[in-house]
Amino acid sequence: MLSVAVCTWNRAARLARTLEAMTRLEPPGAGGGDGGWELVVVDNGSTDGTAATIDGFAGRLPVRRVTEPRTGLSHARNAAVAAARGAAIVWTDDDVLVEPGWLAAYARALDRWPDADVFGGPILPHFDAPPPAWLAAGLPQVRNAYALLDLGPEPVPLGGARLPFGANYAIRTAAQRRVAYSPALGRVGAALGSGEETAVVRALLDAGARGWWVPEARVAHLVPPERQSVRFLRAYYRGNGASLHHEPGFHAPTHGPRLLGRPRWVWRLAVEQQLLYWLRRPSAPPERWLRHLRLASSAWGTLLARPPREDGRGA
Image (tube, rainbow, N blue to C red; front, top):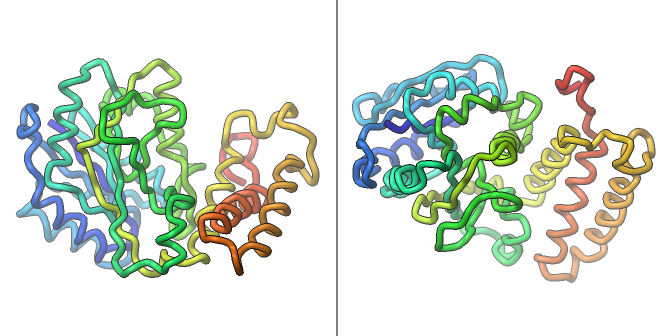
């Protein structure tokens, strides 16, 4: 049996679209597995109609609602891991449309590579409204802000820079339970943190686990109009930069000379890229000034974030 896990916070309308798409899933047995699956939806302390939305699909999906009152995506992910009953956990988000063959593709992969623990698949964009011209032209520069990923049409081993994103990956449950998601990483309420799933996947691969890219396990990530803006991109990449404080070795003296407690190279990157963004935004192609925006925002996020305390938690 496979466990599909979705964590959600105050997105009842989008969640309903995600669950509706899941009603059209082919069973895992179509991929050669045993055919059983469950859907674990973790309500991370929502105050809208999320609970009613989940319960409304009880007759159409093998769904269980789990409540995690501690705010934060990592807390919600850990609650899903504790609740899962399947041999593998297949992760997606509450603003994703899965293709009908998505789950069956993962079932085939789990059977094909029995010695592998980690799997990932493509994430394509689904714009709810036509994107502005600058975003359509420069999308490759900011694709991770929309959790977009495509490693090609053929299976390839995961590792190095080839890592899955949180909207579409799977981990065998026994391996998943060896590494918890860190509450210091990931989204917390409306704050756009990230990196909790990457840390877990990287830890497993570094410990010797094998991983595979599953090109047939496709999903589409919903991109609403409010995310099609420079303001959103700036906030997203600042959250990314803040997560750098939790990277191994970032606070070690060997990371370079410091200014006001931060590496000097980060200050230099922030100032240089901010100036280039201001200079090139009026006339340069979007793919150029979006790169400067991405790098500058990430650097400012690193500079402005509070470093973790000695106990490993955020300050």
